[in-house]
Image: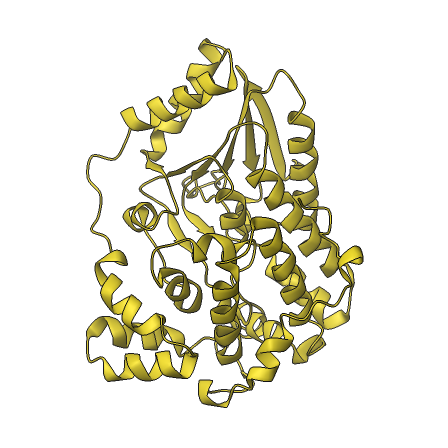
Length: 373
């Protein structure tokens, strides 16, 4: 069986390919562990001057074309669901090790390039946002849609969303809109754009000429990307509504935000309400609190807070009673698209339950992410 994580060192560039294309490269615990092992080894390997992460596409099958390439659709939520309803403690290992991996990328001693093509959501954003150079192609489809499955934008979502301008972080985390290449750039969630087809030429250039230093490697990647940028970008769909976003999503509570959107007769506001209608009211309130707390936190503090939160997602209400388990059931397992949220309306959310998500289940000296600087 082919490895779920493929690696190759080309002229000083360590290339990591997520290789679970039939699952849109969603991260399993095995993949997280492989990635951590590879990156930890390369950190002190003089033959590796920098790293590029990319996703794979479905191989060509008889009578079918090669499938689209996707960076990473997130974590393996089927696995998370099964672990949650059976009480399997491996779910704790998954989140602890995934967050530690993401932190490693954020603090990596060598330049990391994320090549974001196709679906880049949830756990895929966790991998990509720590990179020093975040490249998006014309095919990128980016989002943090966790509130739709009764979760919150984790993997340091509190950190990178809260650093967006104004109330954009609240909007992106609560509503979870899909973003294209221009949106990613204008929101500060990507650095540069490139044609998807130019990646092979980039890798070939390192086969021909070995990089001499990490700085030179990064400059060569940047120069290649800039020389192969997209000739035309689509219009932005999010930042053009910044005034409305700030007016509504800067309000103190979710019921206030909802009422403000309802009083706004614009098509954009009605679309935002339509999207929110399918999300967990409880987890939208949790997400609002998460992003606002994260603004004044360091990266390590955010990871520890989110590790507390995700543990509480499966501990405050256990098994099938978990809001997250119910969201995954409705959207992924049974696919009836009719989650039974508790409560079903924002006005009925108990803020004491929201606050409970931020209570750490561990003393500081026993926190699973206590060693993050």
